[in-house]
Image (cartoon, rainbow, N blue to C red; front, side, top):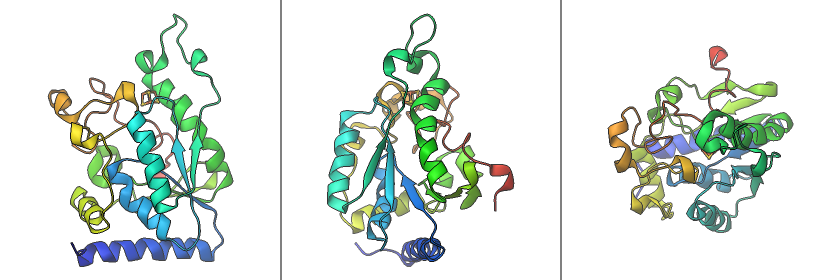
Length: 236
Ligand code: SF4
């Protein structure tokens, strides 16, 4: 299956931007949740001439299938994956009445296990690549390709204008594997307590297929990485 010209041009534009960062000696890292939709960016990062660390937010609540998919891709694409974990032990991630935060306060749980562990990487790098796409949610639709982030970092969203169809075409072209849970109806795979198969959540409303199944039954659609850590008001 050959790639459409439009996809080839998008890939070339990403490589050109990465080379431009290199020319300025900027320190670049990528973050990835290792889903099927992460594949093009991971593949592009793996084929860039300079090594780029890929940070995986290892919340401790991931499906075993996600961890094995991460390891499988790291080996196949020769990725340097860095697992970022919370400094707060799970025994302390509880409310005063003893309930685990993922059941009682998902915002705080996401903060401790996703937002806070990313801090050291934001502080020590100049550019943060993430694979958000405009067609995934209203929040993401309002993003720009580059926006300022915390600690002076530049957030770069190279996949913003990619569609689900582009992702699929790229995956098929390079014969990349799908996340093992996709065949069981999980279109967006996050932590186990907060993810359900998409079809089971259709009645909840609001979510797009690419984010459907996350925080089902709540108004929450983002973990904070793309809201708390984005300065969208001064987007360029
Ligand atoms: S997605 Fe759920 S389990 Fe994972 S960090 Fe957020 S609230 Fe906690």
